[in-house]
Every structure is written in structure tokens, then in C-alpha cells.
Image (cartoon, rainbow, N blue to C red; front, side, top):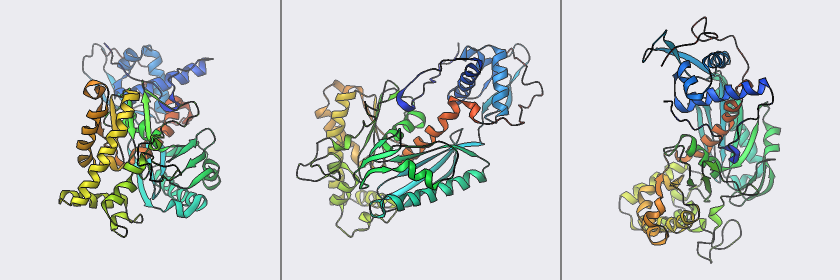
Length: 437
């Protein structure tokens, strides 16, 4: 019996196999199938790949040889388990020569991360930025400089980027990379994609996406709840966004603008949100709401020029020390989280609600009041089967999702990576078939 491998494409919310119009298209499709299988199922012999994918052994041997020649896979140890005939080599994902770059822009920082095809980090950095004060042009200058550092790091590893994805907290028209409204950044109708292309001289796709969507993709692809078919991801930043996956597909909505859960009217009607409306949920549970409740102006934890994780560590230390104001602020945010999350559970019936950003960092103080509120407000028994889980990706979720999206183009069409002179270890690797059980 072969293993069951989920080879669906999450990005763009579709799971559509190629329509092979000719032999070249069939081969591209099969190359992608084998590459994704090695990513999702782990190292395998050619015979086992053939068994589990339904391809014949001769085809798999040819596909493996080509993927090796593109330096996307390589040979490992000899597979001796269960062999009847000549044992075969174990092949595994390699792809150290290609990478994807994820970039995140938020209210008070920019971050970048470079992943190779195996999901290993080549570069990671985050810099403090006052984005609303800088404005779009100077901010994009800073983003381009950060991308330049990421490119230098990739080059030092001998890796060529296959794509860059920028995460933005707001409404993003991904088809043309225009940020139509990012209230916490103070941006309206900003041509981010065009601005990046003008600043980055790189011949590869550049995409602009909503940060919560990319975070949800990262959780689905590589988080602690990977491959959960129905989940809701909540960002914990200055603003609050939601990435929703239903039946294994990213929910975008008719115009691609779904997930703006932070602007559900669940807050104090007397409080003005950054979007200009009153009583949005993020005014009650966003980072600014927590810090206002926990500390006075001038307190170091409210200084946007300081590293965010350092500030959150101080909040946690105060809570651990029993500071009543800090504990009350955390309880207030946890209760507010439960109020909004109950709406989402009643609406989407997810298996998991993932708390990201500062919600995850301070989650041990938030989960109890959140759970108490959920028990009062979720209609179905036992929270309708939902579990509340703290993200293990922390503040890297959006950049990891961005890098993952960039790399998906290679898993979709491995021929995007040029051929080299590299072969598998065996001189007859392109023609040999194994009798591995």
C-alpha cells in the first residue's frame, strides 16, 4: 500500500491539475508530481515513488534523472529494506540552488526571510521602521534595501531566487500589486508592485499579498497544524487580520479581499479605528489596544522604535511578576479575542483557530479568558470541535508564507530551473529501474 500524499496547490485557492496539451506539458506535470511527492512524503527510492504516484518505473527513472540534472533532487543511501532485486538509491529533495524570498511590511517593522526548496532558512532579518511616518516611497526604499541584503545572502549560498512575495497588512489587489487600503500604514491606492520593480533589478516574479493570507498559507504548509483542511489564522499585530482556509483552499472572496476580520464591529463604538470607522474588533484586541491598557505613554513597551519582541518580553515579565495592570490588560484582550473568535467559529466551523503574532507570544496569558468567552458564545457543543492553538511560527509566519508562495512555481513547473551537468551518483541512473518492494 502506498502512502496518501496531499499534492494540492493552496495558493490562489485552487486545486487544479494541469490539462496536458502535449508531451512537454505532460512531462512538466509529472516532474512537478515527483518533486512535490518527495517534499510531502520524504525521501524515497524510485520504485517506491512509482508505486505511490502511479507512474511506471521507467518514467520515474527518467523524471528523477532530469530533476537531478536540474539540481532539485539528489541521491542518498542505498535502500536495502524489503528489496527483492538490485537495491536502489534513495532520492531526496535538494534544491539548494534555488530559493524563495518572503518580505513583510508592517506598521513598525520590515522583515525578510529566504528559504531554499527544502524549507531551510538561508537568511532572516527584521528592522524597525516607522512606516506611517516614512510614507510609501521611503518605505519601499527601505524594503528594497532589505531585499538587497536577502539577495546577497542567497548569492553567498549559491542560490538563485525564483520569486519574491511581499506581505502587507491591508486590502491588496494581488493581480496588479496595488494596496487599495492599508489603514494602519496610512496607505491608499499605492502601486507597491510597480514601486518594487522600479527599485529591484531582478528577473523573477514579484507578488504582493495580504499578510494574514500568507500567514495562513505558511501554517497550512509548514506550521504545527500543517495540512489541516479547515483553519482560521488570526494575526496579532497593530491590526488584526484573518486568513481562512476552507476544505484545503485559501478563501479569497469574490474580489480577493476576504479576511479583514479586524474590522468587524465588536469593539467599543466610541473608539475610532485606524480605518476611520468606530468600534472595530482590532481596537479592542490589537497590539495598540493591549499596550495602551498595559502602560502609560512614554513607557518603553510603547516605543515603536524598539524591537517588538523585546517589548513583548517585557510585557510578559511584568505579567509573570504579578503586575495587576498588565494582567488586567491581557485578560481584557483575551476576552475580546474570545468574542470575535466565537463569531468566526460559528461562521466557518474550523478544526483549528491559530493565534499568531503577539497573540502567540503572550498566548499563555490570553488562552484562558479567551476559552471562557468561547464557551459562552460558540453555538455548537465542545466549541463546535474547534481547537485554539498558538502558532509556532511566531512573527515569521507571513514571510514564510511569502517564500513558500515564491517556491511553489518550481514545484508546479520544475523546468523553470535550468539544466546543469549534475547526475545522480550512479552512472546509469537515467535508465535503471529497481525491484524495490
